[in-house]
Amino acid sequence: MAQPSSRAELKEYCLKQLGKPVLEINVDDDQIDNLIDDAIQYFHERHYDGIERVYLKHKLTPTEKETIKQTGISTTQSATVVGAGLTSISYVEGVNYLPLPDSIIGVNSVLKLNSSTVSDGLFNIKYQLFLNDVYYYGALDLLNYSMVKRYLEDLDHVLNPQAMIRFNKTNHKLYLDIDWTEVGQNEYLIIDCYRIINPSEATKVYNDFWLKRYLTALIKKQWGMNMIKFNGVQLPGGIVLNGRQIYEDGLAEIEKLEEQLKNEYELPPIDLIG
Image 1 (cartoon, rainbow, N blue to C red):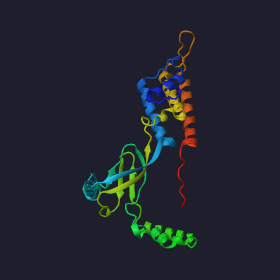
Image 2: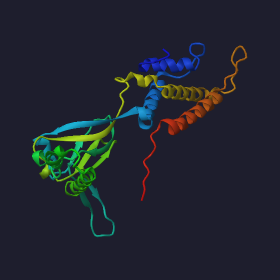
Image 3: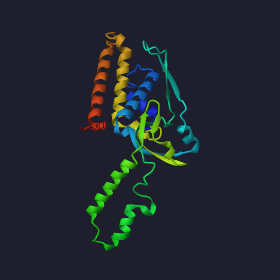
Image 4: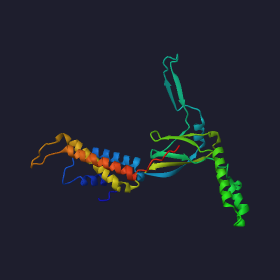
């Protein structure tokens, strides 16, 4: 039990840390289940071990391509304009998006659909250069080769830029603002994105040291909140209930653990220079 590998074992571990079975932990099972969900959600959103970077491959079928290319309406909204002599204006939204799984929480980019500007089969500049010059061994100027490659990459970026995308994890729609007429049949989309770690598959999540302490503090806070109205009540044997102290201790531990997560386990934001 010291190394929980399931949701039930994590729950039992935290209760024992609070004193079970020596003490009666006055927290309902449904409350604990909600706290486990909250703790895991916070772990996924902030802890660098809560997500993984993956590359998803999706084969764009002709039916999907035609649907996205259409200028049909996915949603229609109306707005009333006051004082302009107009009663309402309708707004339409295209359908140029692909639905992503709920486990995806962020998208970096979509790999280029076409990179033939720089290389394509026998016309690959790297292939041609090595085919003609590499047999000279020491005659190849690596600096010149590197500069030529950098120039061609800049040229490719101008003529064949990265796909413009928009994504929000609340609706799981990946919008691709590209010219769909240039996308070939049965084209593959390679999506560079971040996916949450599923605890049911990666059971070591339940044994994460920070997560165990954080969930224990959440349960302690809930325990104190449940008992706070009995503050000062004296039980048989002279024991006095102090729910407010339990609540404040749990709250202080939560704040300390969240600060530790921010300083030690959370990925730092990327600086913007300009």
